[in-house]
Length: 82
Image 1 (cartoon, one colour):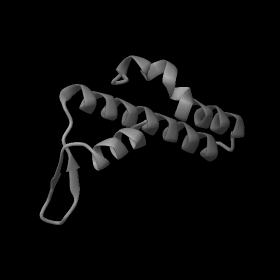
Image 2: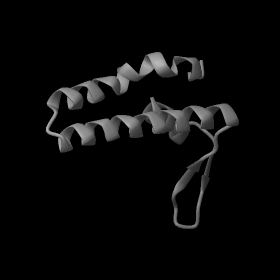
Image 3: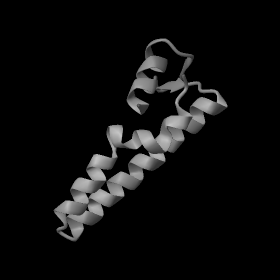
Image 4: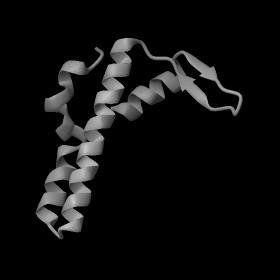
């Protein structure tokens, strides 16, 4: 979802361009909360995947990976913007 949110604001949203030509997406408080919450969740999934790989536990890797993406919906649907 962060990618689609990013894509929307990159194409149609409120942007500002820095001196080094990077694009900053201007978000309101609710949008910022949503993006940061999703980023934190994805970091937790990555941590689970890396931990499973380190422990050679492919079941844990699979479980962590399946929880990301659409598996993220149950924990974050209340934050969606529509």
